[in-house]
Image 1: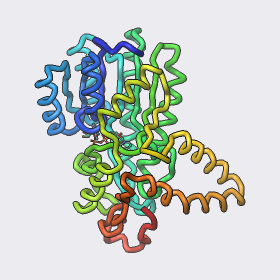
Image 2: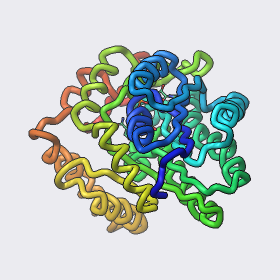
Image 3: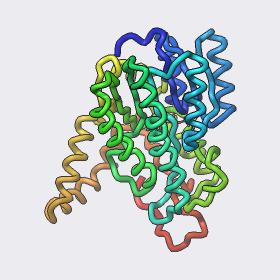
Length: 328
Ligand SMILES: NC(=O)c1ccc[n+]([C@@H]2O[C@H](COP(=O)([O-])OP(=O)(O)OC[C@H]3O[C@@H](n4cnc5c(N)ncnc54)[C@H](O)[C@@H]3O)[C@@H](O)[C@H]2O)c1
């Protein structure tokens, strides 16, 4: 897709971070943008910005895990703009850090509910409407580099993001005959508000096995501000990927962080897991991995230093049977 002018774009998580960056870039490119978000304060702030710009942006408060509300949001788009969107960006997401073995059912239900089922809800709601409208279109999902690397420090997130990548590849195959393209964006870090994820966690899923005190949120915030890409820059990269109909977009995080190298490492890891010799090779590689990553951080800074002191990625304090985390 090259011409965005007059196209209707629906963005989940469109009121903050990556989604807000997308709303800014694509409204400037001529799209009529719907920003759907669970946080009313984020929606209000974003709408104040777009009103000043006189941009054609419509806000809908939506929890993407609520299927009935999602269908109502889709109806609202048709009412406001006269038809279903030609572009759907599944960008909303949450994260939670803590040891896999401390995870509760609620940790899995919440993170996978938003980060994987939220996307599924978007696809099942909108894809039939887009196909029936017969105008083709484009779907983008924001997964994560974390979908390629197992992380025992945010397991529900890694699972959801790996699932999202596979989900989108299946939909890319399925939607080709309808003229609907698909891009899966897998960033490594974004300057965003994702460290505030816990604020939108529903009461009935509040039981967590992770340490979630304010100190950890502050620590996490600093990490994203250090290693993260600017959301508007990221959205510009996404626009280019859509114009080029490129399925995977993995923005580099700097020198030595070439996406192709990272993907080859992923493949090599899986091959290594298939033999005892490979298992040993993999253990050696793992040892080197974080050291290499640290060397390439901006100005040699290591934003992960002090994680243990901040209790970031630790288990809930009363789960004394959980061993302290190694690494970071
Ligand atoms: N921040 C990073 O470093 C990073 C890295 C890789 C991938 N990502 C992914 O980027 C996407 C955007 O996140 P971000 O970093 O811009 O964070 P963000 O918190 O700034 O934006 C996410 C938005 O999604 C909304 N949201 C959360 N739960 C929702 C729900 N149930 N229904 C509707 N809206 C909901 C939030 O209110 C927020 O406004 C996410 O999918 C995230 O996993 C982020």
